[in-house]
Structures are given as structure tokens and as C-alpha cells.
Length: 232
Image (cartoon, rainbow, N blue to C red):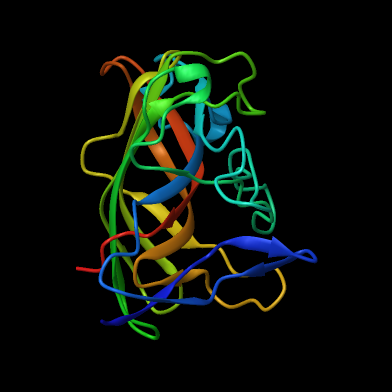
């Protein structure tokens, strides 16, 4: 038997509880939820060479329609606000879970490897039926988001590549040669960073993405919560 620190990510009395102890070699299926979008930034923030290109704006989300466990939360995470940090982590789905009304199956795989006061490495893939996210009501079909080679420093800030797909945006990828800014969300009450081996709550912002082809230019951002991930 080995002990693991595992983020439970439930709300009690408005406070985010991130620390529960799970014993055993298998914490169970990967769990997670995500919310993301591509959008046209202000004209002043678009490089001159990109200003004549179009942006396929759209959003996607993966989150629980019904609580995964008794007393659990539902919905997608709050998108990064203009100022401050998100307060609502949404509710998780888990790998292999059937979607609402039998509409597809969620597939999740992830790793959050590292240690407290050190750096972390994150890789993840979440795919499944689109949740009716507040930023994109009426969305349908399936969606996917990938976190590729993200690194997080002791200050909770880092970078990596984040791709996603929605029916409106098609595939969204960072402009060649760029990465996305990634930050760990602090606990709304304690301020402690919401990351531990196997679990994380992060936001991202990509200032320069392609949506479908090279003749497009957008920015993208979003939030992801990961739990029960691998630690190596």
C-alpha cells in the first residue's frame, strides 16, 4: 500500500477543500472537467501580419450533468475572469463514464507529476460529449482538449501547448513557435495553490492560435480541473 495526496475538489461552506488522503496503489479512474473558448482579441493586440485573417470563435466544455458523487458539484469550470481568479471549479466526469442520455463516452487520461515547493509537469486529454457551457449555450456534438508538455514552477506559473476542438472553432492550436501561459488557481479561502501529485486546477491563455487553418487568428483561454491522474 502506498499513500497518495489526492485533490478531492469539493466545496463545503464555500471553501475549496483540496487535501484528502487516499491509500492504495489505484486511486480509480481519471476525473476532470474543462471549459475553453477561442475569440477575436482587440484589434490593437493583433500583430499587423495577422489583422486581415478571420477568427472562428466558439467554446466547448466537459463537466458533470449530474454529480459524480453524493454532494458533488456539476457544470464546467468558470472561465478565467478579466481580473482575479476563478472561484467555481465545476463538477467532474470520469474516464469511461457514459454521457448524458447515452450520448457518447467520456475519455480522460492525465498525469500531474512533481512535488510541493517544486515544479510540476502536466499532460492530459479530455474528450466526450459537449457540456452546455454558459459561454456557448446550445453547443452539441463532441469535444476534445489536450494539454501537452506543460511545466509549472513553484510560483504556480508556467507554460505549455494546449489544443482543443469544438464544432464551431474546429481544431484550435497555438501559432507555430508559441506556447500558452498556464497558472494554477489558488484556493479561494486559503490562497494555497490547487496542485498536488495527481491533481490540479489550472487556467490557460494562448495569445495567438489558429482555428482550423493558417488563414485564421484568434486568442484562446480556459480552465481545467484534473484529479486521479498519474504521478509519473
